[in-house]
Image (cartoon, rainbow, N blue to C red):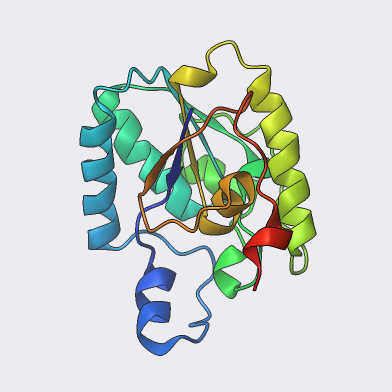
Length: 185
């Protein structure tokens, strides 16, 4: 399995300059973010991926769509892969809006309001990561799946803090869950 952080979003670009929440709800990718997704697709072209699973946030769906188009892969939308919900950018778009923007994707299993209604604690993200780890461990094709997600979720899965469009190889059957007690100062 390959975990893929979404490309640079409008939030990431603004936050990098001011280090304050710019108040953007469910932002899309910047031009740099789209370029990063294209580069990720090139790097993934020799990895034998058969499908992508993506968070329903716009930045993740845009990243997955770019990769999927180039590699001719189907995309499955999975709300469990969402971000930790610390900033305004972690308020998502309602399912009905996503269905209009991505009519070729299935959203029937996604609730209308699918993102956390309040800040998701470290424990909450860790629990979602553990749930996805269990799902992924049961996938016969896990070695051929790309997962487009977010900084906080990938950190909860691996303990790694990754940059936009970073690729992280992950084996849900053997890679241990991070021990945050050892990571925190």
